[in-house]
Amino acid sequence: MDRVAERMTILMADDDAEDCLQTGKALAASRGGVELRCVGDGEELMDYLMRRGEYGDPSSSPRPAIILLDLNMPRKGGYAALEEMKNHPEIRQIPVVVFTTSNLEEDIRLSYDRGASSFIRKPETYQGLVEAMKGFREYWTEVATLPETEPGRGR
Image (cartoon, rainbow, N blue to C red; front, side, top):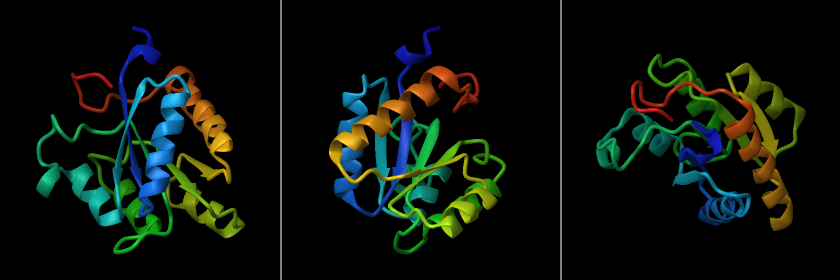
């Protein structure tokens, strides 16, 4: 099966709704093949992943193939959410890409120490975001091999 033709769900955890909107547009501009869903903080991220509350129905809240994670969010920040995800047997195999404005060496190191699959600094321009999302989409849909998001249901 052509991996690019598959519809991959990416879940973005970021408290900036504009960043989510622009990232969705940039992904669509990079030939698509992905569906971006957004949550506003680490608590909502965990509710989505654990299918609690409004995210209880798997048909309306599909398991993501990849998570884009901002570090600085209210209620539960990125580090705490990352640690919780990587310590939970049902969701720890989902790749987590830290996607943040920080370029501090400490943030990079701590992200990888806590189980991040990658660290990407958010570009400063929309064109930079489009280029970053093109590379991101190509890598995760055409190069990398991901586990099934729902056993028996494909990616």
